[in-house]
Length: 513
Image (cartoon, rainbow, N blue to C red):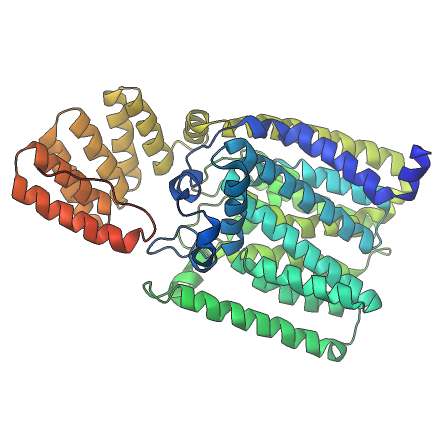
């Protein structure tokens, strides 16, 4: 009886299998701690901020609720609010939410495969491959990484219900399509690209665009409202990034497309804190050859317009990442774009699969198993802040952020000389980052080297006069030196800057008496 139930309800059966796989891979993250990389700022430092009574500010603030913050992520903030209400500050709850979001996104991708009428078993195998893909580990194991899995969940569901609406015009389908489109917009600006995805789908299916003009007007209206709100949110901040800088960033980051493409088939050399583009051109070449072989193997059985559509899915969703100045090249940004590549693989391999079902099924299961093991190992790097930052430095020894944070760990262990070397390395790698100078100055204060501390604080001041921690530490230092007037002046400057930079936090207490 139970077997018949599952046979008649394939989606339920697939859901439980995917849930078993996802929790087998990521279940251990529930026991992980915070890694103090954005999660401390977004969650730990904002415990007084993340309250239901503060919901107005939560949905109208930038993600960090600070000056010069260029990211508007109200859905992400709301997800942290929900976790705070349920779990308070216990990390297991935040990690559990990440796993559940990933499972939901993975299952929604399977539903999309099914709706587009690809072979059920092949759709399941590609979805399984997606679920355990090593490039997505950071989106699940790193708490703030959930923003990309949330974006994928809402974008895929919005597309899913749009396709259903195109098939049968149900009002409920249109409602859910619009709902998830709105949620995707307020998750990440990348969702704006979805409008082009919808239009290209209509073209691929040879629908008449004129019949959908009313919906197109709704999309454009929603995007306009979104950008008006976004403009209002950032109205108190300095001007947005100039177009020429965005254009130059796009040119600089073009190799990212090659890197992300090779990662889909060869997810190797993945750094948990990337700061440069590492391209293996042999892997990229093998990936291109694989796609070409699959294409020509089933040349007469594939729909070229859908090959183009799925390729555009990948490119359009990945391009916004290339516009970000000072890109850190995080691989988990491939989460949503990669869904398009798996759709493309389904399109060009389905005929070959039907002719070699057993062989291809075994091959995909073996690859999924290999990906599972790689991801299982990669996940351990997010266990706690010590393991995270040490691995970040091992993966990317030229990262100034990794060097600075390992220096902090060494300082906490009273290994001041080793910490000094790491801070100096961080400064040499990024001499324009004032935080590194401040942290080194604090280390010198602990080492009772006041002269060196003052030197580096003044260097930090020349780089960024709006870093409130410079004035805080100068006030503390002048207080201990008996320079009361100078300490009071620095204290007042600290409070002045803090008030503008940290609108919802309490300043650290400074006693100058």
